[in-house]
Length: 323
Image (cartoon, one colour):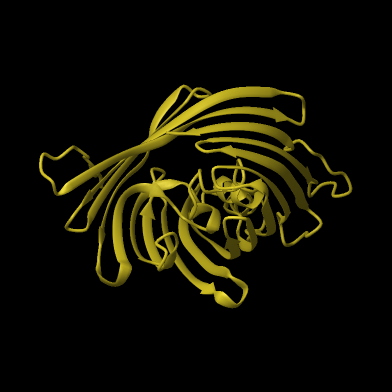
């Protein structure tokens, strides 16, 4: 079976269409714990079209000097329905957790926190062909409900459900994400899943988030199936993030960020884990953003849990100019 789709976004010659272009350019200095450094640059350009009949279209491109690549990140159409419901279809990001509800310019940290990077490693997040139905919250920034079905280039499928609600008593928002999918392995297909609970607050002066995730490790579970006794391997993680504006206003300000993560790689041996701490500062001058972040990650191994290595630790300097 061969499946395909196409997407075209073009300027219209009538007054029913509005096209908006935006994006950013970014420079990064990344220094790893072993003393190796790397400088690279990227840019993103997004074209968005909005029609009076409720249709919207978006195409987002990214170039990156580290890999000399130019790729399509988004190619999506959606339509507004009644009562803030929308459906959308195309090539886009799977959204699991609050850090995938926010785009690169809204996110507080340079990179997504360690727990989210593990979800990327396990392919619970990433880009694929998606059909999504969602209901926006009153602010239009987040969702109240969403249900998405996706299919990736590696021929794996996913089904993601999300429910969110505001908690006015503490000026915060709670979200529950559940993903069930298929993962092709050497001798067949295995079913994988992850659950993510997020509690978070965002304001002009401060932010915080508390998150907990649990799921199946597809890579280690496949290894157990081939070489051991077919036991399932489950992981879990806890992440806390806090940020605060130190001085200034919306046009020019200094802010700080701190994060702590505990990630248990295998519930059969909870002493095998990773511990991470992130500290950073950010300076904003209108459309220019400068961030400096230090991240220390200590990880042991299931073979020797008494010895902890810090190979994933790094320091990052980021400059972003919003177009």
